[in-house]
Image (tube, rainbow, N blue to C red; front, side, top):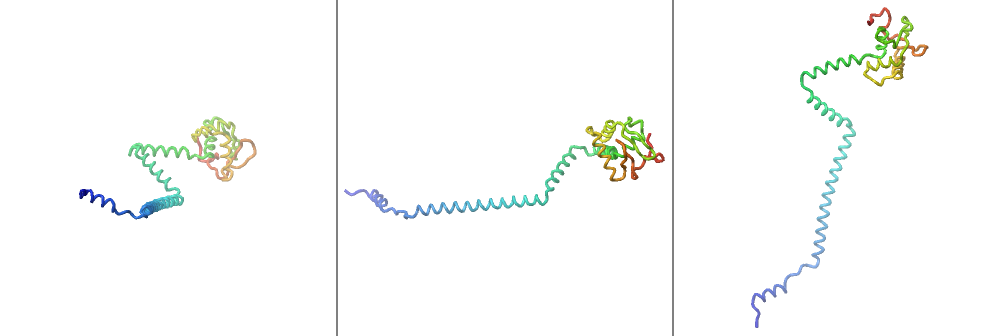
Length: 202
């Protein structure tokens, strides 16, 4: 009894199906390795480019260290300008700035001179020892430091800081060294303290 034609054809195809070559597995492995290497090469190139850009940025910041600081300052100034109104507050601020500059531009030796020329205002903090020679003495050091602190708006002012500032005038010739504790003398470069000087305060 002969089998049907379709079953015979199927058995023939199954028996004589072409077999894959024996090295197909090695070919697949090689292909996978090649793809992995290609992918790693691209990744390495990307990382190298990114690292190079970072190195250039760091080098540029080292060459221009004030660039970022300047940008931050400009941004802060823009924000402050936006907060202030365009007309009235700016005029007010300018006037206040001029007043503050005038108020804070007084030098220490000028402040001492003005106190000596206005005895009723200095609260006996300083007094003349010899007006003709320009010699004066600090009587109340704490009060003297307090008055100067009020002038400079510095609540932490003390006589130690004040006397150190006075001694700096020795180099410039505004004050001269004299004997005596808490005693000072106006030098050749100081002006406005003499009796015949037009600088007289009331």
